Length: 79
Image 1 (tube, rainbow, N blue to C red):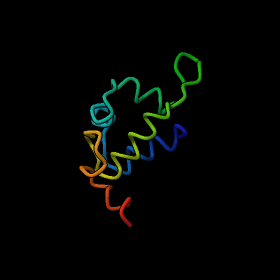
Image 2 (cartoon, rainbow, N blue to C red):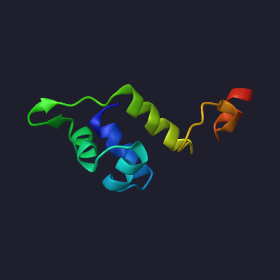
Image 3 (cartoon, rainbow, N blue to C red):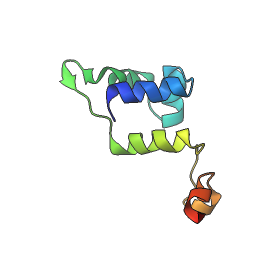
Image 4 (cartoon, rainbow, N blue to C red):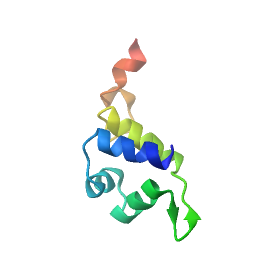
C-alpha cells in the first residue's frame, strides 16, 4: 500500500486521522507518517498487517474473534 493509497482509504471511509488511528490501534502521528511516506527523512513503509487491517475495516470487520463464521465477510467464503 502506498502513502497515497493509505490516505485515499482513510478519506474514502470519511475518517479523520485520529479516527483512523483509533480503528487501527495506532497513534495519530503514525497515521501522518504513513500518509507522508517518511519520518525525519527516512522512508516509512506501511506494514502488511496494517494494510490487511485497512481492508478488513473497509469490509466492515472491526473486531475478529478468530472465527471466520463471526465476520461480516463470511459470505465471500461460502459463495
